[in-house]
Length: 310
Image (cartoon, rainbow, N blue to C red):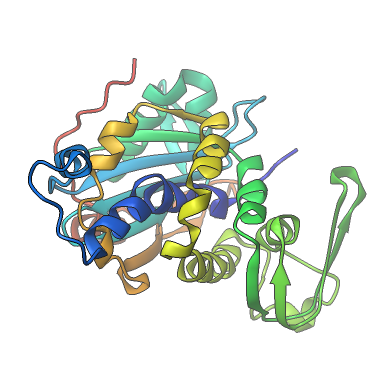
């Protein structure tokens, strides 16, 4: 079953930054209490408050059992400015792997994280410091843990049924409260019965769906990146790590968020690799190297590769 779920991975990385480390540091940094130099809490937390240079993280998402990668994204995180840039890479992007033309989502099942990192790094000409592989099921579970997404605007009536996937999507245009299952359905919607009514929002392409998904994710972060969700940290971390494959340690992750109190939704920027479908082979997506290079140069510079995939 194909799940091209752009949103699941960005949900994971943002929640990881915001909950696994950021909320705790947010509490500390905004506290009005001055901790004495010999206070044990201060001694525990301060070693993590070390500014570092921007890093690039490759985020892969799919079915954990089949090890597919229907979602591939590059995340640039700047710990000093708390800016996060997200570059979505269409899974059908044409690359060369082992001297053959392949879709980029072939890299991970063929050669694991090392080949996936190498392939994306070569395509974009960037350093990649870490990778995450996350099972898509985590998205629905975490949304429910966080109490759903409240008062989210659905731009058009959505009606779609696929019995083979047990997928049934039915939303009315307007403001809705979404639980985890409903948020997953919204993310997966790409086409519907009333084509003439939805072409402005969904034309069957990944790009249109990515636009819609980004709107939900921004609202998710706006609602949930608050101190009130501090008590949920342990359960969220547990859920994440049940579905996670990565080469970054929790200690390294914590060190990436010294200025979490400065995070604002306006610091979150989304991009998609510019390109077009190949005229003779529509199942390939051809990256526009010049336009992509400009995006990468402006938003995805990072320190030299220090990841250790084997």
